[in-house]
Amino acid sequence: MSADAAVEAAARLLDRARHAVALTGAGVSTESGLPDFRSPGGLWAGVDPMAVASLSAFQRAPQAFYDFYRRRLALLRDARPNPAHLALARLEAAGRLQAVITQNVDGLHQAAGSRRVLELHGSLHRAACATCGARRPIAELEAALDRGALPVCPACGGLLRPDVVLFEELLPADVYAEAEALCRRADVLLVVGSSLQVTPAASLPEVTLEAGGRLIIVNQEPTPLDHAALVLRGRAGTILPPLADRLLAAT
Image (tube, rainbow, N blue to C red; front, side):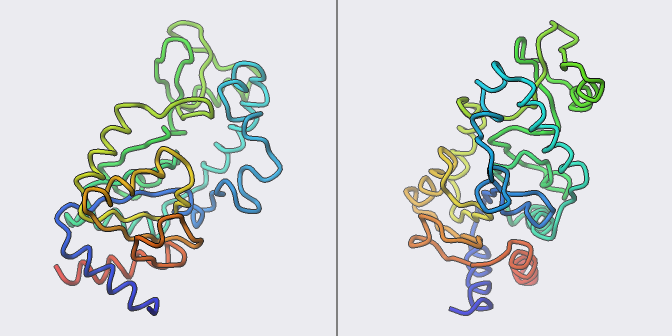
């Protein structure tokens, strides 16, 4: 199937959908200048994630932990939504997409205008106290680190950390349960920029399939579920805008 025919087929599937949902991964934000995790040049290239992005690292080696997240926050500062984020926001605004479930922590879906966004792994735009759980603006954490101090919660004196899911931690149960319910109800799940290798998020498309829904996968590399999906191989920012154009032209 040609690339144009695949876009047309995806538009037809979404046009018939009554409850379409998107699931996005790191690949949707690479065109905004944010690295993914496992490719050459990705966040884990030459880095042991357990040494810098795990609960153990935060507890035992906080300086290495904070240095890593300072670099991530610096990258995020200049990132802007790309055409893929904007296309998904257009589909939601037109009533063609019910929600975006994302593995990303960059907030770019919200910046693009998406309103119902489920952040499975949290957000780098917030800090959270490791002791009392209070949420604070991420700017407070950054300001403390810029002064050479550890970021401290004003409520209890505990350490602040980015409000993201670390290695060795579970996803928020309420958020994952809502995501699972959305995928079970979805007649079409649009998977964008995800390798479908990180669990438990990687199991969400199987929830849709088991409930009788269809999968559309937009990704540059193969995924374990390509055999069960309509696959559009390429960059999300190249594929999603014409897909949205065709779908909305049919409205």
